[in-house]
Image 1 (cartoon, rainbow, N blue to C red):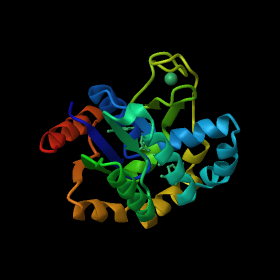
Image 2: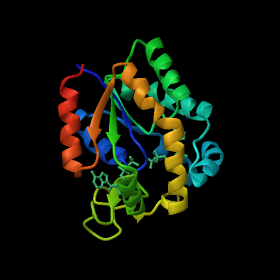
Image 3: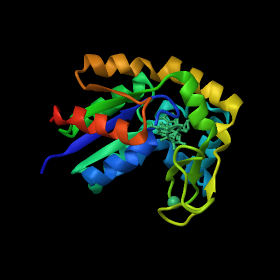
Length: 219
Ligand code: ADP
Ligand code: ADP
Ligand code: ZN
């Protein structure tokens, strides 16, 4: 069977989580969101959650060694053998190098890195209207992707909430962190011959179609 090992790259609010929900269903691969992993750990107040909390609260990146360890452990689980989708990882050059080394050592490799490009002013609007399911992490938007019953997740019935770090001051810092630390990965993956660029400034279905079309040329 063909394995599909994907990375979704893009600034906060680009639509990574939204497209990840569709792609992981289409390819029947696990959705590995480092943000979701940290938020679950914080909710449960695990040792990881206690370490990560201050970084998420301030919109800073969790230190590389912590994130790399978490992702390596997740990629060792059997359900990733037929493929996986990484959402929000890597976010720094050291994380990207660690991922390459880890996969190479196991005889695996990435199929493609999808960069979802969206202009900054659109990102701010998306993040301020974002709502998340507390239980399953499904993503909604107050105008652009409304739930059927107010405040209740369509998928699991869980309660929707607004992320603390989607407040305006924190959003500004997260965008700065993105441009400084994560944007260089676009070039990194371009040079590795893995990058697929999609226009994220169109409706959700349009972005998805562009991703599926771009993926046809890969393998
Ligand atoms: P968004 O998609 O809106 O940028 P995420 O849910 O991916 O948000 O990430 C939320 C927060 O989790 C980040 O601001 C950061 O603190 C932490 N985080 C997630 N992924 C990483 C990563 N790969 N490296 C460092 N920190 C991360
Ligand atoms: P990311 O994971 O990259 O931070 P999300 O998938 O959480 O981004 O999307 C951010 C917000 O924008 C959510 O409220 C989501 O419903 C909304 N959104 C996602 N894609 C689109 C799109 N193509 N058009 C309009 N709104 C979108
Ligand atoms: Zn839910």
